[in-house]
Length: 264
Image (cartoon, rainbow, N blue to C red; front, side):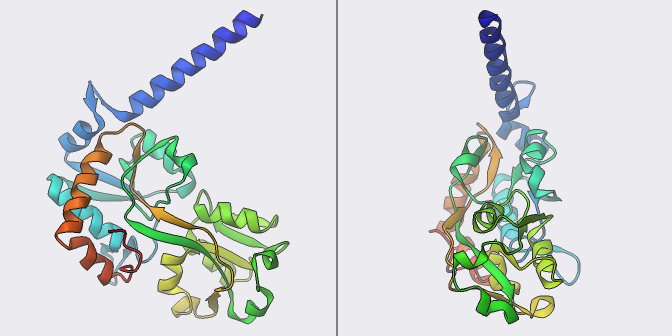
């Protein structure tokens, strides 16, 4: 019986290794980079939020990550395409080749590195706590969140932070949905990227909300995520260096108000 169990474990390990290998290869003996470059498109998995990827007044896709991806693809001689995904299913969609990369303010973590091939980091970020302005006095420190209803985007770095802050947690479909849930009174606080919060909190539909400046969460970095083992990450890294050197990334960062977070 013990020998059978060992055999089963060994088979499972082999299957997992083969799955990872196949995900990083393009099929027909091609590397992932060859697969992407040959088809001429890079399908970027995204969610919609400012200032990274969003629709402008004419309905055209814009944003820092949008123009960044387009600039990289232009250098590589391919076209950037953008596919809205469910953030909680991002790795499934990536490994299933519904998308070629995750390029959407994607936070690098040690756990994600186990399954994702990250490029070099290009933006600094932190998670932040957002509440109704009328409730600011109730949120003095991280301990103030305990027992209160928190929300964040499912599968995000914000979700991890929110769960650490309260046991009364409910997932939202996106960062924008998390802020909408907060505005409508379904939650007491939301945890979102400060890059997003700085753009929209206290304005327009979110005029009644404020960032809790007294609650400081851990800093993090954004990078592009490819299939584990993909050689495409190295090719994108080389282009990132070019775009930093020629000032393209600096100009984009200034355009979208994230120049203070740009990693040079």
